[in-house]
Amino acid sequence: MARPTPPPPDGPRRPPAPVPSRPTLPALREAAAACRACDLFLRGTQTVFGEGEAPEAERRASVVLVGEQPGDQEDRQGRPFVGPAGRLLDKALVEAGIDRRQAYVTNVVKHFKWEPRGKRRIHQKPNEREIAACRPWLDAELAVLRPRVIVCLGATAAQALLGRGFRVTKQRGQLVPSPLAPFVTATVHPSSILRAPDDESRHAEYARFVDDLRRVAAVIAAEPAPAPAP
Image (cartoon, one colour):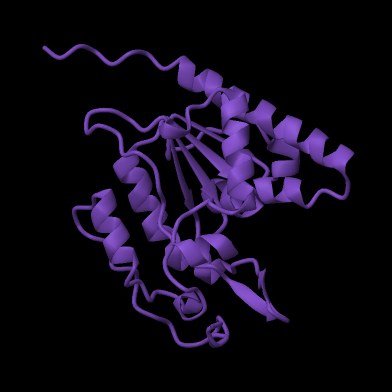
């Protein structure tokens, strides 16, 4: 059953996200489930935290892919990138030569923001306040994972991590200097490919998306082997 629409985003401020002082991925996931830092918890079915194989303590994660927010299927299942866009991403990662087990997927915002339209739940873009309220979770994930490469999927993720002046349409595929990771880049969100107006456009956009991910695969492949234990 659909939950009621929450109060407007200019309502009273809520307490900050309860990020653990000594975070681990399991501890973060558990704490995030109780987050009430913005009103989106009233609308989403559940918190949808990031997912992927955690790296060994002494090694970096290979790649973290950051989207905007969970969608309808993600909200229902409690897992990121399990809907149509996630399946397209999985396919593209394989074609680009990135082992899906090397990838951790997450979102800037951890709750599904939507509006009812008949029986459907239609995606709404999160606002700046909602993004800011959820940012401590993403920062904590990145601090634990220490990724070698961050890939921002879509404009919301790119502007949240790289600044409001970043334009995916002009800068996609470029490696951008950032304190967040040794390599940071951005490309389109796979959902935008699914929204292409016709098959020809969809195939062309998908090919460009795979090309962007192949650049990421080349960066991962160039990672030096870890030093042997003394």
